[in-house]
Image (cartoon, rainbow over all chains, first blue to last red; front, side, top):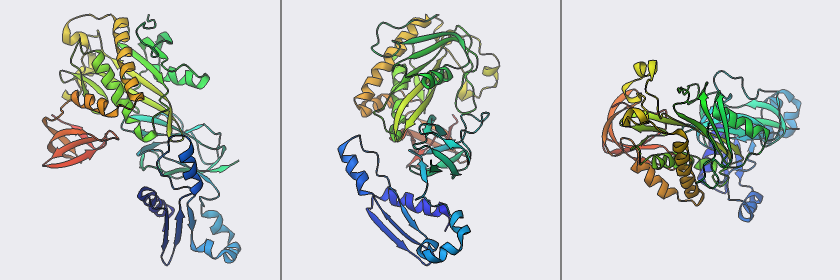
Length: 163
Length: 258
């Protein structure tokens, strides 16, 4: 089970409209729940965005065995947990580009600090080019998608550590 | 030299004329970074030296003969997933504006064709905030009085041969008048978009769609197939009936052959 597999499962669950999902296999226990607070704001103000899986909780065996995991610090740090970081997600289906054009440098790299509102990538959809802005100020810890790869709606693109 | 049109309400009311520039879309981007320009601001040039097309491609245009301009819109009412509606509104607006001069067709998804040749193109660049469109820069290039297309005409494949209004009608056009017409046409369809008239706009898009409901040859996954274009879906994907099966294609998944 790679992070990408988990992402795909979450994408599928997000698209399904299910309120709460628990999947349990030998190697994985995954529990997701839509955030009721988000739902409430959708009803009050602003045209509602499509249902988004807010704060997915991903539990892996290491996390379940919490006391043991502390002994092995390395694998825990290596495992990128979406709870500690904020994910910048794709608002549409399209192609992910890390630069404005093939000849210009990438917008951001791992380790870079980004400001809220700063452009981090372009998603091309049906020949329209969409500049995606970071929703938080922080440091880029991971770029999850390769340049020029297809992305799905709500797929995570970057992980940012809020500063 | 260009000045603001009198007939529109928002588009072109603030008009920036640059005798020469690299790219009107790039200039519009720069304005957006410096300030909060009025919605409807138009950047127009007589000589675009590094016009951009689709990613990594260029838009070449002869100076003083054609229209090259960009419009800054703020379609905050559109969700990211609805962005193709902008393309629909803009292409329909241009086709309707030029209707009295020429029967333009929209070659899916955003090229302007007349008599089977390419007369114009559009490059839309959006700036998103969360899931909504904050700004949209609509770059438009239309061949008007150009006669000689030089090397490009010699090397372009038959389905991408260039043409101009003049080449098809033998008339010379006043660029300012044409710009006024096009800005008004786009404003009308943009107002329709603002009032959520997606279905009306889509009907008009299909009405002017190149190869619509005609049997043609396409290339799909490296193979030649025959099919009919039957429409577009809400994302803008092309619906083609191939051997009695309706299939939907993204822009990179299908090539128009003949």
